[in-house]
Length: 145
View 1 (cartoon, rainbow, N blue to C red):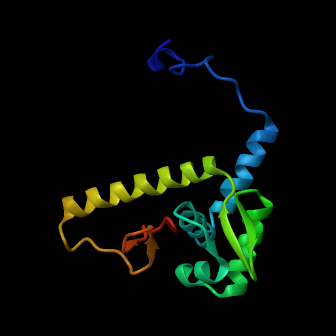
View 2 (view 1 turned 90 degrees about the vertical axis):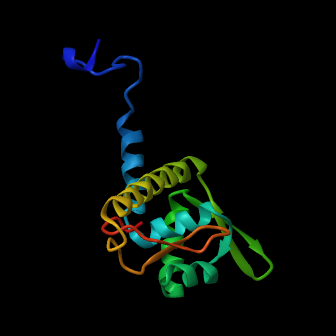
View 3 (view 1 turned 180 degrees about the vertical axis):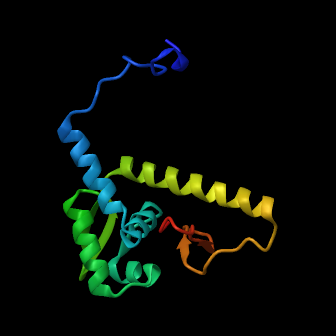
């Protein structure tokens, strides 16, 4: 059945998620709705870090970043392991990281297209996201990304 015929393309070819699954997904998206937590997940998607490195890159106070990490850890989005005296954090759910990368990548691409269309006067603030092996990349206005 085509979309214009009163249905959805591919309708019936999937199983509807349970209320529990939808609830867990909403909780995960809720956690990622905070710009600092989204930034932390983005950074960890590009490599393991300890809380000091994360606080420096996110630009937050160490206790605040530790609280964000605790929430992300409780949700299973990040994990940690002890290396000597420090705690090293890493991605706990690669699937969630794929969603984060997809969303940020898509928005960054849209921003680049807008910059090309509107010329060099199209600029955003100075907040930054870091990619491994690359210099700073501007954060996207209004998205917290």
